[in-house]
Image (cartoon, rainbow, N blue to C red; front, side, top):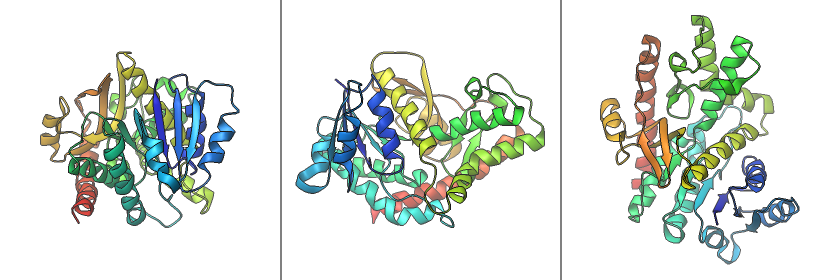
Length: 325
């Protein structure tokens, strides 16, 4: 029996993600938690002819604790979304407290669960989650992730668009760094199959991967940010973890995580001078089996990496400072 708890289930990411999870044969028990609407969404989903049982909870009567009880995996898209004119730093003021409160309850109720942070700004909210779990002595670096899969999905999609290809999924592009703006670094030099981009194409596609969220924020004109594509990407990452936990091998995904304590991570962390970084990892039954080396970068990517790491250090410090306050 696999239980997944979704915190922030009534939001614009949580609702489509709950639908995708209900359709998955990898999920037996799905609990939804939010400040509003979660029980109604659960009833709605339970009309679907798939096996997963769905239950919704509100804050009253220890609803959060009930949603988390026995959870194997907790995914958190809770918090406010970005609107036009807002940076991910603007989100921090509200979402930092949301993450700390939710993860405190995870530490109390299901400390051995996988914890997946979707709530932005992920570069800062993951360090808050980690510091909170450390405070309660239940942090396992192999099981706590910032979900950056959308950057990988965008890289495949946008390089296919640039090349006029009709099947984006055939392109596997490693994406390293963080999960906002210039901290996101798609490595098109390592794309499989190899791609031949002009400098102009490379610059344009890299920028679009880094700032693709802005396209959506502007197009929605205040009605939200990346939601359905984020739900899709989050679902992909959740499924990869659950497949690995079930014993499937050879499963690799990019993720933003605390590198020290991960096999192969300490060396990369020391090399870069930052403890938190997104990179490809191999997943296993207990979470991350190993961090994969970054590999050889082009001169262009080396230059972008230096920019990414500098900005990432500031983002990480912001999360750690909030946790220490």
